[in-house]
Amino acid sequence: MKRQFDDLQLGSIELFNLAAELSSFSAAAVAAGVTPAAVSRSVSRLEERLGVRLFVRTTRQIRLTEEGRTYYEQARVALAQLVDAERLISGQHAAPAGRLRISLPTPYAHYRVLPALPEFRKRFPDVEMDVHISNRNVDFADDTFDLSVRGRAPDDSTLIARKLEDAEMVVVGTPAYLRQSPPLKTLDDLHAHECIGFDMPSSGRRLPWIFQVEGETVDVTTTGTYRTAEDALGGATLARAGAGLFQTYRFVVEQDLRDGTLVEVLKDFGGSSRPFVLLYPHARHLSSRVRALVDFLVEKFSD
Image (cartoon, rainbow, N blue to C red; front, side, top):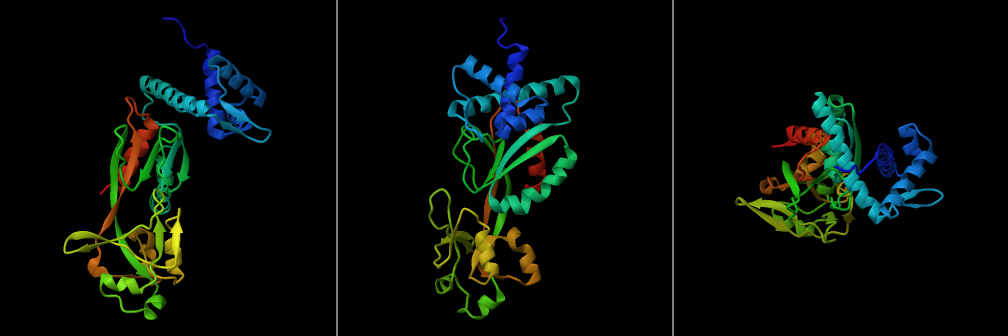
């Protein structure tokens, strides 16, 4: 079989990947123990070989072109598989290593995954973590993520979905707000209250609140002068400040409920939940570090 790559070309691909990950030739040079000029030459050799520009370069920064992003996504998977293959053959496959990129929604990041990551790193100290915190859905075809956690599994046969948990929803307000507000005994009473809204990133529409009524889940459209977007924790912060009622995940306000800072209301209609799902692309060979994090998160949070 004719050789497709020589040692210099493989080295150029590695340096290109480092520059893409770190968004800097200088940072890639420090990480690889070479000069920035060596990184630049390696990228130029790749661009000449491929016949496309991989980076847009300015005096202050670099960024991947569309072709560069496509090449990076494929190249990083290929290099990771080579590293895993060597570990597998040499009997070192039990020690995952390398960089992992995961995208997390705001509440699940701050109250679930981020507090657990130090434990994961103690188990696998050679794994580096890049954590992206956003409520927008990521596109694995365009974004360079290994995994993401989202509120539902998309209709995409190229992705594997693993349920992590069904997170219970609660409606909360401060004691001071409740003392000065109308009685709150039924769902219809919500219309007389200041209900803090959250706009869904996918549609921009106000997220309905969910309740259990005679064993069935019902949606309630609320009204109020406060609307939050992007950061789902903003509504909880407003509720703590006495701005009104807010429906959020119980794990977000557990400490507030214990302290009495917030009070749960409409308990007779509680028990509804929203899911959190771990997503990652199908792969014939899943890298050991991705598999390690998948197993860890499922072990940690799965119902």
